[in-house]
Amino acid sequence: MKKPKEFNIVAIGTGGQGILTLTFIIAEAALRQGYDVKTSELHGLAQRGGSVSCHIRFGKKIYSPIVRESEANLIIALEPLEALRACYYGSKENGTVILFNTFPIVPLSVSILKESYPSLEKIENVLKEFSLKVIPINATEIAKKELGKGVFANVFMLGYAFGLNLIPIEKKNLEEGIKEVVKEKYLESNLRAFELGVEKAKS
Image (tube, rainbow, N blue to C red; front, side, top):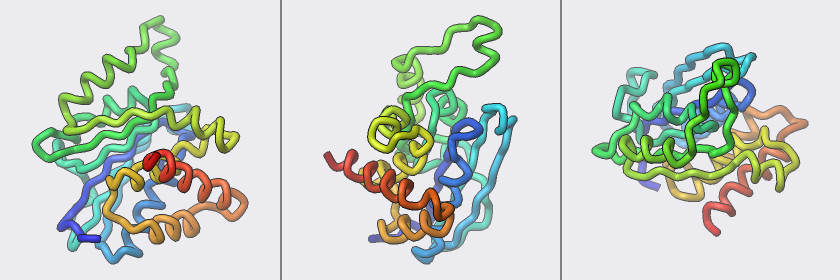
């Protein structure tokens, strides 16, 4: 696998969706691949379903943990509206790919103000303005159906991204990253989620 000079990922979702776990797994896997790695985290009211955004940068030599506007290679969003929050990190010129979970988590502000949650079609159309390729998938529903819990959507999406050749990290290193980061009692389920994502991407 050819190593890029640098690779920039923005992972975003809401509190409780496992964005930090996803970030730590990718960072650990990138280290095992021999990359220099930098990460950063931005927390909203994570425990209340607020936005959580993480940046992962790896390559030959990385000096800053922050992905600059328009310079993401890959955006992984675990919720549709969160994908919109992160879209400005992408650009068609840089070939950004946006992989987003279509399962909505309606913000409390939308419910209280009785605003309408935008349709997936509208969201996808906006994302296409910032991305060379937009890939929607209902990871939460697949995880619920196949694994019993939607919480595994984060690692499922990692496997899906790998299966589509969107991440320049070898499979064995991603699996080792999962083993290093995930607690023992959840390890088997997360490894299954990762493999399920790979299989779905290749089917």
